[in-house]
Figure: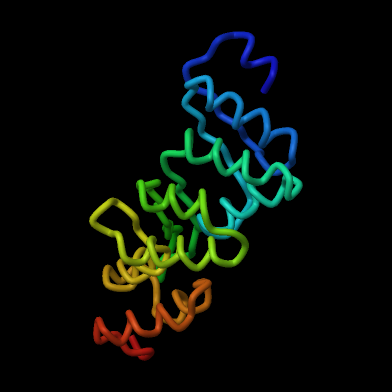
Length: 173
């Protein structure tokens, strides 16, 4: 990352941002106005935010939250799934950092961040957020995956079960 920054890039792709050094350098690059595309091995956008913050000591976590608020615009999380017929499809989650979410990241600590961000993600489709379960429901409705497959990969079984029922989707489909 440091070597790339010497070339004064407009866009930087980070293929593996899962250690403290890479996260720190990436945040510093983002503060310089560089558009960052980074890959993290997490399950869902909330896990990505948690992993970034929790890499740092408690003393530095507030500073890291400030850096995230200043530079983070969105997170996309995706999972490749086998289609009902053949081939692959993608279920994804889109997390757009809104002023409300920025406030949550600034103020909330620990599990409160997770719960409040999850609530925002589930309730703010208007602002561009798409939950993983909404993506799974779309795949089921478009006959790309089975309801059973969706239930087997979700990280919020109860929410997805409710959404399946609300869409009159039975387990036999």
